[in-house]
Figure (cartoon, protein in one colour):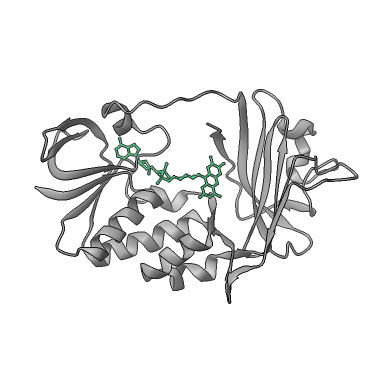
Length: 268
Ligand SMILES: Cc1cc2nc3c(=O)[nH]c(=O)nc-3n(C[C@H](O)[C@H](O)[C@H](O)COP(=O)(O)OP(=O)(O)OC[C@H]3O[C@@H](n4cnc5c(N)ncnc54)[C@H](O)[C@@H]3O)c2cc1C
C-alpha cells in the first residue's frame, strides 16, 4: 500500500509530491498523470508566481534551475480602463521587492517549472505514472482504493486530488462546488515587444473580460485576451492580434515567432 497517491501531475500535484517526500523521505509517494509522458513539454503557457512561491521552489532546491527562465515583474498595473483610453485611471499598482533581491512576483514558463519539479521527483524516487487516469475511488476508512483507466487498482493511505479545475476526484468524493459561466472565451499566447517591456505587467478588467499582458524573458510577454464568447477579442479587427493597426497591445508588441500556438481556454 502507498502512503500518498497524488492524482494530477501539473505543478500543484508535483509540488505536493516534492514537499511531502522531502519532509518525510520514508513515505511512498506516487503521482498519476492522465497525459502522455512528454505532453508537458508542449505547454505554451506561463504563470505568474508570487515571492512566497519562488521561496518554496528555493526550499525544494530547484529555484536556481528555474531562475534563468524567470522574468521578475517589476511593476503591476491593474485597471478597468481600455488600453486605448486617453486617461487610464489605475485601481491598484504593485512594485518593488519583498526583500533584497526578491521581486514581488515572477513570470515563469510552465515548461521550466514543471520540468524542474519533475527532475526533483525523479531524484527523490517519486514514481509518475503517465497516460492513466483515475476513474474510480473508494474510501475504505484507513485506506482508499483508486481504480485507474488501465484497469489497475491502487491502495493508498491518502489520496490528494490535484486533477485541475474540473476535478473528477472532487466529484467522486461528493464535494460540491458552485460554478457559473461568464460567457467569455479568449486566447493565451506569447508576443514579442518592439520596445523593452521593463518587467511591467498590466491587467485590464474590461466589461467583455480580462486582458492581461505579463512580461517574459527575451523581451516577450504572455498575453491573456478575453472577450464575450463568439466575438473577436476586445472589439478589434482580426489582424490586430498580429500587431496590425488598432491593436490594444501596449507597449507595441507583435506575435513571438517562436510561439505560434495560441492556447484556447475558458474562464471559470
Ligand atoms: C488564462 C489563465 C491564466 C492563468 N494564469 C495564472 C498565473 O499567472 N499564475 C497562476 O498561479 N495561475 C494562473 N492560472 C491558474 C493556473 O493555471 C491553475 O491554478 C493551475 O494550472 C492549477 O494547477 P493544477 O496542477 O492544479 O492543475 P492543472 O495544471 O490543470 O493540472 C492538472 C493535471 O491533472 C491531470 N488530470 C486531470 N484529470 C486526471 C485524472 N482523472 N487522472 C489523472 N490525471 C488527471 C491533467 O492531465 C493535468 O496534468 C491561470 C489560468 C488561466 C486559465
